[in-house]
Image 1 (tube, rainbow, N blue to C red):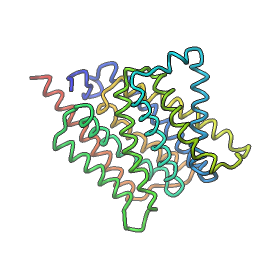
Image 2 (cartoon, rainbow, N blue to C red; image 1 turned 180 degrees about the vertical axis):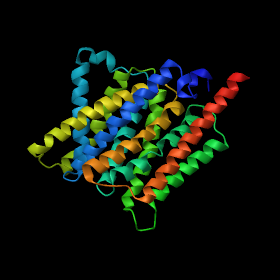
Image 3 (cartoon, rainbow, N blue to C red; image 1 turned 180 degrees about the horizontal axis):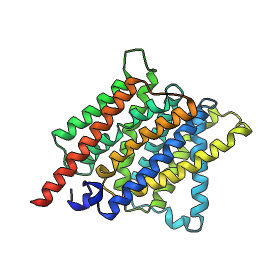
Image 4 (cartoon, rainbow, N blue to C red; image 1 turned 45 degrees about the vertical axis):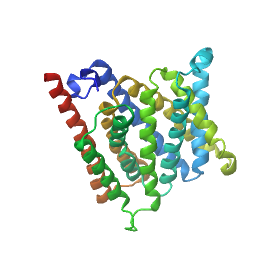
Length: 302
């Protein structure tokens, strides 16, 4: 890895691009958790395939409207296969997460899904050549233990669907790494490709699960599409500006928002096992991040 350009420092010492990347990620996480809350509301009435299709189709309609004057140039990608992969991982993550929300609470699903920052760290080492050592490996293992505490496999406490956000964490991490790898494409290009691929893939499912949308639910579908569009744009920009391992730990703020929305909108309060597992996940991610920051500072002094 590079040194100062990698941005694994205390926030006050971060280069401008790293600071902006972190701020963009924080905004993205806030909007995504609001979108997730709307998704939980809607999946109580509609099949997840229909909810996801509506979210992606509205997202694509907004993107096409905004990019219409320069659509031909924006559609060109230097890495089309990676862009296709990004679109597929995006729809896989959303599909797995929204399906889980039919059976478990928003805070529980988000806590499990938030094991993704340490998975991003691992994937960045494997695919982007970032260094990995025993401390990173221990951090990754601890985060997965935290997720398993929340899921409690075999305990008969949480629904088996709790495994879905864990799988979604892997697909999300894969998408984040591919986003980093296609940073040669513009943000507009990445958004256009991901929304198009995701919409087309979900279109294979939607006709078989479709039911009429009630007039009183259109606001939720439209708002979900708007939130998803803006959140995705912020996420792509964040990972194109900053080192993946530098911004990923700030995704843990989603736990705070998910707990708040779950309490405000659904009257759900996380149990002690969810709190314990989430604490372990957050501690593992912050441990990896602080160790990397210290390693970068030590290397700079040499």
